[in-house]
Image (cartoon, rainbow, N blue to C red; front, side, top):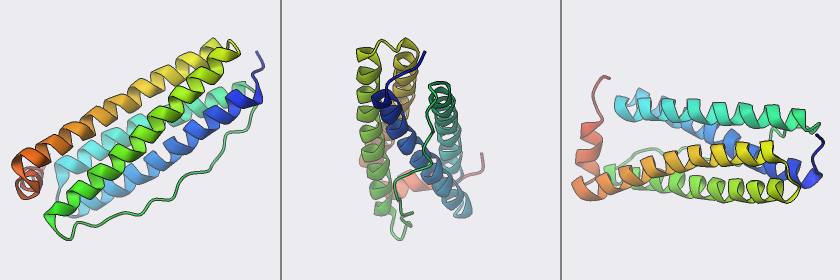
Length: 161
């Protein structure tokens, strides 16, 4: 099956978000580990592994469609925790990024559906579910921070796992 350039472009846009998520989650994993926030570090490690799997699946599918996977990514800046309240900014960044990625996957699903590329449609749907899972996890983190406060939230994550 040869797909249209629109589907390949849509999958490449999804890939751009996955490259960004992998790099960002890895950066925060190292940052949290260095500062002793081991539970957050482990969360980021698990999220990074999920993002890497989605990224690799996308790259494989683009190769099958005889396209060239992009190595592009969005710029991100690691925000340090100078005050406990800064955790809100980090969580908000991931909520925004994952929300945009979810919308991009939905656009890729629609593009694949229009040309009857069921494999790309299912791949985008499955990856969108993974993004929604991570989005739900970050929303629950945000609710916990709002409930207990940033100081107590960070204190709960400062333990060896």
